[in-house]
Amino acid sequence: MGIVGASGWEYYVPYREDVAAALEELRARVFRDEDYYWSGDHPLGEDAPTPRPATIEELWEDEGVQEEGTHSILDMERVLRPGERPRVGAVRPVQPDEACRLTGTDILTREHVEAIEPLVGEGWSGRVAVLHDGAGRPSELYFWGISGD
Image (cartoon, rainbow, N blue to C red; front, side, top):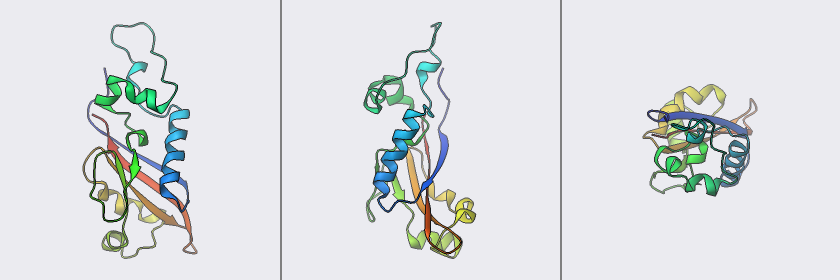
């Protein structure tokens, strides 16, 4: 039996100007560490778990994953560019006006995370924010979202 309903997830990674590359590195790490939901770990009517796929591509060939997702960053395929409309399976960067509206600043830190979390919106989507250190320098990327069925 799978997870019922969507799941929220979040990750902090070191700052990298190329957010798309940071997303790919994060996805590779989550896959390598097996830090995602896999229906084969809980097979119905079978005695032993099904071996996990060897690649992310193989993972997405699984019918269960296509229907239920992984309840992780693996459900996100790309980073949207400014001005692109939100879409399923995409991470949208937090824009300065959104940050200012919710926190009063566009220089976000970990202290602002709780205030910006509602920006994620609907399921099967994610957001990413640049978080800064005490001196105002970019230090982390914060990815968060909701996915899975």
